[in-house]
Amino acid sequence: MIFMNKIVLLSIVFVLIFCLPVDCSADKISLRMPSYSEGFHEYYYELIETALTNAGHEVVIEGVVDLPHLRELRMLSRGCLDILWLVRTPERDKTYIPIPVPLTNGLFGKRVLLVPAEDLNAYKDVKTLQDFCNLNKVGGLGSNCFDAGVWKENKLPCQEVANWRCLYNMIAKRSRGLDYFSRGFNEVIDDVKAHDALVIEPHLLLEYNRDVVFYLSPQKAHLKPIIEEALLCAKSSGLLDKLIRKYWADNFEILKPEGRTVIKLKNIEKL
Image 1 (cartoon, rainbow, N blue to C red):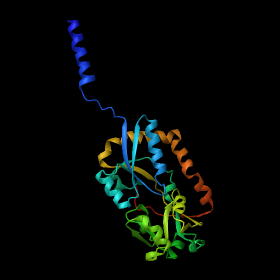
Image 2 (cartoon, helix red, strand yellow; image 1 turned 30 degrees about the vertical axis):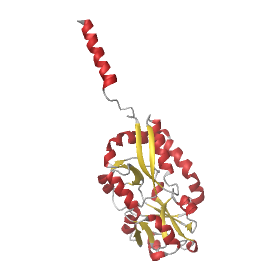
Image 3 (cartoon, helix red, strand yellow; image 1 turned 180 degrees about the horizontal axis):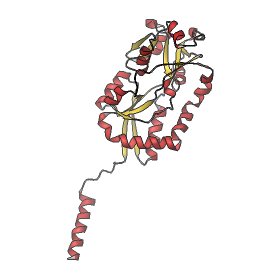
Image 4 (cartoon, rainbow, N blue to C red; image 1 turned 90 degrees about the vertical axis):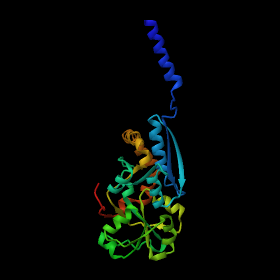
């Protein structure tokens, strides 16, 4: 009887090992993510790849180059992109799958202006939000970007453009009466390297209390706990701070935030 039981047990083990399909790539995570010719994506790529690798996963990232923002959002909702970093909002939380780990320690919410060279000192006397508004300078902003809502909430003149990548040339040429482009503290240095017809406005730092997070497409919802745990480990281990210093330490020296006038902006909605 014991001998027969052993035979049955061995038969079951044989079936489990050799006959049932085994997913050898269970720990392999493939992600389609946007990439940009200016290199804005590099920090986010290294963060998620390193965090997941440290958690024991093999990571393959496929970059999709220089998409307009509205197309990125459509592709994310349809599953043509797997993951995207966006300013967190309640509306986006309902549409996509949020991973609620802030990614830039608030740097994205510190906004610096790109302006034509002749406007380098046009904002030097601004001390308050009302002063800024009174200049009647028109901001060029990407359609459906978080800044567009914030600018409207704060009654700042602005125009939205479907493809935000067109704004660099439009502002340099003052097309449609646009005067500046609001960019994140962590983005603006790469901007001027790639678009030398514009300069960084040296006097102001516009600030709202919001950061970017990763959003997954609904089709990749099963990855949320895996990526969230990996990012929390990256935060607690110091990896996130290390990468912020690697990519953006020079921004503090160049932009000198301590010498700028800080203009606080109201958020459009609470989380």
